[in-house]
Length: 95
Image 1 (spheres, rainbow, N blue to C red):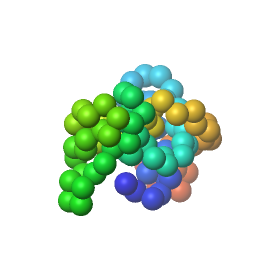
Image 2 (image 1 turned 180 degrees about the horizontal axis):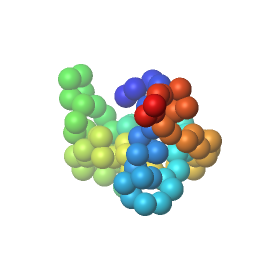
Image 3 (image 1 turned 45 degrees about the vertical axis):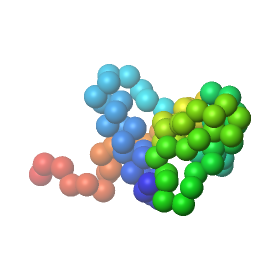
């Protein structure tokens, strides 16, 4: 994942242009999003070298850890980040 917030803000701007409505960017705390099962809130136990699928200790299901983390992140309440207009005024346009 990129560390630069600029990249995310630019992606949101491009998505807004493509979709035709304003997409908003929120900051959420990602702690434990890949360790808690979205379906039952059980703990996912990933083995060394096994990152895509993990068994849940509570319900026993094998869970796609990437999709699970995305669902957990989407369910969190975030902090709305400020909107930046693009393209940057520092970019040269037609002269």
